[in-house]
Length: 347
Image (cartoon, rainbow, N blue to C red):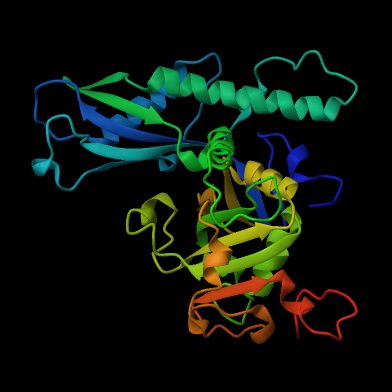
């Protein structure tokens, strides 16, 4: 991504190329819960529900919304006999990756002198309008499957809702939740946490399948100047993530924590990471990662961890992956008295 195409200037409906053959492609994600809507105790037929919802999306709006079967995930709860009457019987996710219906809703009007910026804002509004309309139409709708009725609960995941996160951190800092943040009078977040990423996409080719600090730093530097960086294997998503992330098995994913030098870089990076999936050139895999902002002051707490749990990049050469956790600090190279200029890595 070139300097002329900064994250904040990319429409919500357009992909963003970063580096190492990786790109961020836009999508809408909705969370689904399925409840019983009648007194029957028949098991849910996931395939029939999927076909019913796919047909609904194709025929119920001014523009057809085409959803491949693999982008609609419905899974019954295993402990169905132990669940209460009002508990959901199934859950899942809906991914809308072809967003042509957002751009097809008429021409963008009232463009000002800065036409490109106006288009970015207008498409962002249309994206949110469509997402809100989908939630409004689908949340609470009943589906009749061969005489058995079910009711849907539909919501936007927190990790896809940039406006909600923005409001949360504004309230967090406004009402005294600033423990550990002491860099000046104005308190602002600066750290992003991304989980569920394929480890091998951040590894050094032909060296290791584990994520490399050097490669990870190169990739995320396209989104802004980095102060601190941490990479760790991510098993938090559990077995349910295997299907929802296109077959990435637990233990083959990583979690990346990025602290930016400037609030503007943090803001733009989080904005562009929300409602997008990660793709790699030459791979059919789509990484539907989760992203959020760090309210726990991760890097201040990380400095208090035992040394074997956290290592600085200056002490770890490329290709060396003996630690499950890698941490890089931008100020590590500034400590030496003979450094005439700041170096990112010590060879």
